[in-house]
Image 1: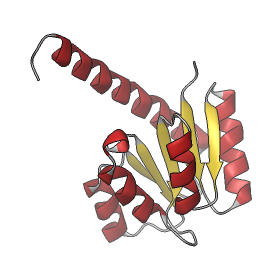
Image 2 (image 1 turned 30 degrees about the vertical axis):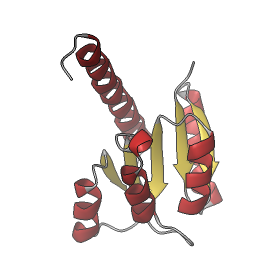
Image 3 (image 1 turned 135 degrees about the horizontal axis):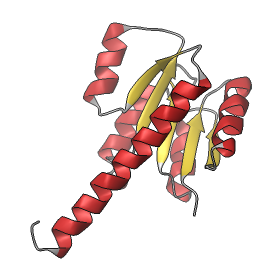
Image 4 (image 1 turned 180 degrees about the vertical axis):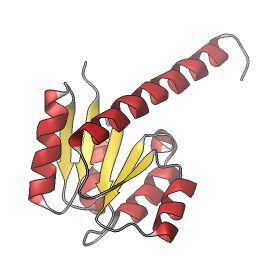
Length: 139
């Protein structure tokens, strides 16, 4: 079963570009127009990674990340923030919340694809490690 990535951006052109690139990589994609929409969709789909814009109406990417980190089921979900800004304080906040990466728009699709592959591989390794610990009684 292919991994599923949630793309969160209020700009349709960005969502379309990312959807196309990720589908070509073999991923399933769920799209959301802001953080609130993303939370609804994340709760109803089996999401393996989130790629979110920073600035959006209703709920921005930082608030979405905060919500996900407070939810046990999504506390370790790989999260990539994208933004046209390169604010050092914003990057620090995102990093402290455990985001995988920050990409400044415009970015190369190949860079995003590498980040996605690495993030999903790392998450799978962490998941397998937790299963091994639990089955061996090392909790």
